[in-house]
Length: 383
Ligand code: SAM
Ligand code: SF4
Ligand code: SF4
Image 1: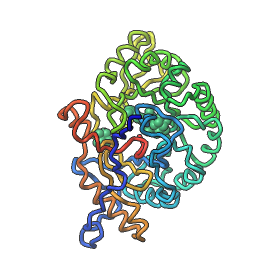
Image 2 (image 1 turned 135 degrees about the horizontal axis):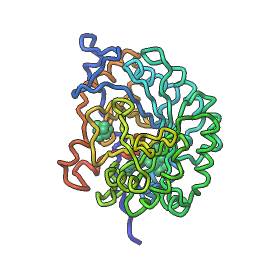
Image 3 (image 1 turned 90 degrees about the vertical axis):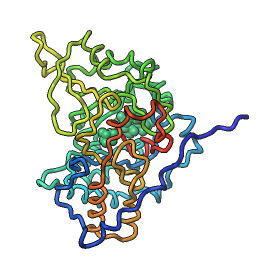
Image 4 (image 1 turned 90 degrees about the horizontal axis):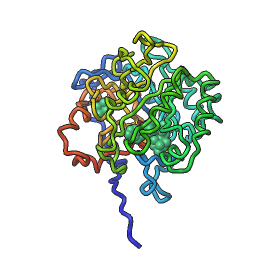
């Protein structure tokens, strides 16, 4: 029997310690919402991964041959507790974060996630407003959980759905999960008032690109925003190849030939999706028909206004989706650091940030840049 090699170097324990200057009273950074990184980018958006486990095995994210029963998932004690997450989140909010997205792995697998949502929903931005609090899910547990998530204070939700055809969908999730259950979950989210709902579709050329038009027709006029994501070279296990990426420009042309589109203005700075509205007979935007979004993470870098930080399942702070090292906030918390110390550490880490991987990608060797074997997995830091 041949031995299987897991092409993954476990980066989860190799986090950096916050810089000593963060704890010196003369160089302390306090939270006042004015933080900027080396490229002048503010900190506004925090993505929190609440579990590294998932019940799907999408092969662009958690390929079955790597994420099998022997995969070393984190033990429960390594995970940040809800109290720890809320404490850190409050400090990020004091630094100017106004949007928090819960992700994973599959966030709805984290037991009692509603309790965390309740705690986060009670936070207020620097302007005194509730946070933009959302969650990205594969939708498998949504039918059961939509109402309790809403009751806990979740405002809106993003559901990942890679096709409408049942065979294609089962192939994409690789655990034979039926598409009808996710569609029922989406309906339950709508009925519970979790809106506006976004639907994320990762497109892999030759695998699910025949689902683009059926998805457009299905979600047009429903008030839900369908967003197409270019298949990205995240992590080190998905065997990414450029020829499986369908560039957004080609995708928009394909849709436009059948269902005319008009380009719309970005809705907010740092917005990852480019917006396209469905056109009316006069060539204007048919507002009732709605819009789609395209996220061109591979072909069109949007690092220049990237205001996102990511907190991994075990409390490591990542400054870029493609980073190969995080900064260990959990040790700080568990060593008894004060709020001022933790806020200062976050401040120092953000001020030193110069990440712009997507912009630099074109200069890296194709497919397997030297950095790729060490990148952390998407399921660990969240999308
Ligand atoms: N399990 C949840 C889900 O699937 O929605 C949340 C976590 S998942 C890592 C977050 C998002 O990342 C999903 O929309 C997923 O499709 C996307 N994603 C994962 N791997 C990707 C890849 N290689 N390229 C592009 N998007 C990816
Ligand atoms: Fe699970 Fe989401 Fe990754 Fe698919 S994309 S394997 S649902 S974490
Ligand atoms: Fe932000 Fe990194 Fe993505 Fe650029 S590559 S947009 S810096 S997460």
